[in-house]
Structures are given as C-alpha cells and as structure tokens.
Image (tube, rainbow, N blue to C red):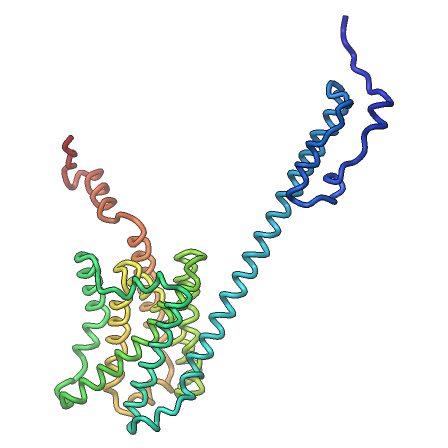
Amino acid sequence: MRFIPSYSKRAESQWEPSPASTGQLSQKGDLKELNKRPKNRNYFNPSELAFLWGERLQAISSIRVRLADRQSIKKSSQLSFTFTQIAATTFLVLFGVGLIPFHLIVGSDYNQAILDRAVTALLIILAIKCFYPTTLTRFSLRTPKRRLIAGLLLILYFTGFDLVSVSFWNFQLIEVLLAVGFALSIGVVEEIFSRGFIFASLEKYGVQVAAIVSSVHFGLLHLGNIFWGGQAVSYTLAQVIYAAAFGYLASGLMLFTGNIWLSILLHGLINTPMQFLNKNDYSEIVTGTPHWLGMANVSITYAVLGWILIQMSRVDWRGRLQKIATDWKLIEGVESEH
C-alpha cells in the first residue's frame, strides 16, 4: 500500500509569509525568526517543507546581497578616499610648500631650491609615517648583497654613457658638486613622493596597480613644464610618456632591492647631465621637436625591465633559474642531504 501525503486546509491556513520572505527582518534576525516554527506544523508534508526551505534560501540570499552591498560601498568609499588623498597631497606638494618665504631665510636661488626640496621631503616622510608607517621600512639601507649589486649594475647601464659624455673637466669642482647635488635633490623629492607616498597609498589594491597608477601620476606631473618650464607641448608630451615609463622602472627597482635609495640614485644620475648644459642648449632642446623613436625605444625598455624587476621581487628567482638550468641539463641538480 502506497502512502500518499495530503496537503490539508489546516496546514494551508497555518502558512503565512514570514518577515524574511518579505524583507522585513534585519540581517541578524532572518535565520533566528525562521527557527521559530509552530509545533503543530506538519513537517512530513512535502509542500510545507518546500515552503520552509524556500524561505530559508531566500533569507540566506538576502543576507548575501546585503553583505555584498556593504562591501561594495566600503570599497567605493575607500577608493574615493585614496584618490582624494592623492589629489590633496599633490596640490600641497606642487603649490603649498612654495608659499613658504624661503627667500627670507637664504639668499641665492640655488639655496632656496635646495631648502624647498628638503622641507618638502621631510613633510612627505611625515605624511608617510602618519598614514602608511610600514612603508618606512623601504627607507632602510639594508639590501641583500646580490640585489644591491644587480641594482647598481642597472643604474650604471642606464646612466654610465650619459655621464661619461659630460665634460666635467670644464667646470670647477664646486660647480660639479653643486650640479650633482641639485640633480640628486630632484630625485629625493620626486621619488619619496611618487615611489614613497603615492605608491604606498595605492599598494592595498595590488603591487601592479600601485606601480602603474603611481607611474602615470608621476608622468602627468610633468605637464606643468608647459607653463612653468617654457617647454614645447610636443616635447612635454614625450617627457610625460618617458617619465611614466621611468616611474615604472623605479617602482620595480624599489621593490626588487627592498628600499627606495637606489631609485633615488638612478633618478638623480639621470637628471645630472642636464645640469651641465648652458641656457641656450637647454632652451633649444626643450623647445624643439622630440625624437619620438628614441623616446619610445627607451620607454619600452624601462617598462619591460620594470615588469621583470617586479616579478623577480615577488618570486624566488634564483630557485627558478636554477630549476630551468637543471631541467635543460645546463647544470647538475643538487640532491638535498637527509
């Protein structure tokens, strides 16, 4: 004899939509309310069980939707705060420090520029300490020996030929020291701001996002040279692309070596040859037509090497190279002793 369950009118009259199915409960009360079931309900009735589990699934679904909405709102507000912070800090760095009357403290333009950059760098470091204190570990001088040597070789490759072409012997020693110091001061401020503060503010979204966005931001900062540097528009646009690619390389060098000082050194040495140009030669360069092919070649090289350095900073590159060499039978595998 086969049992055929029946759906009684009594069970139907007891069924009423719960607050969970109508969206009237809070997140904490949904499942709690569903557990409050009448004792006289027929739980052997398939129809009533279907309604019950349907209510539960709907309550769980509504909880998931609300949690997703809260996470989306949190991410949106976090992103808004990050870009507001970047915009405000950029404005203060470009215009705020310049309002300080350094001419009342020191006389020469050179000393005013050095003092301006020193104050700016200290304020940026203070901001890093307040908002992103863990980033201060990158200001340590401790760097693994092999990575330090690799970083110095990379700096020598990108700056050596340009530095050798400078006629240092045509200048007095004090002039050379002042020019190199001025170039390094530019590297200090711009690297601490872009690779220090801006990179740190974006690092929570991922290393690649931080490297790319901070590099693009660094490149766009050079647009002001159209108005304040007397540069041609075409030359400045090329400079923006070049600076963005360089920023990506500097980010990779910072991550690979674990500190910001080699990026500062690279930046300063790249700027050094320009300090020995006379005004006429400098004006002819910045107001002329850029060499787009050469700029593209250097920028692509910067970007590729920057990507490689970022990847090598995140993996055991020595172990991988050793494994590849072993797989290709270039070296013999070393068996571990047990």
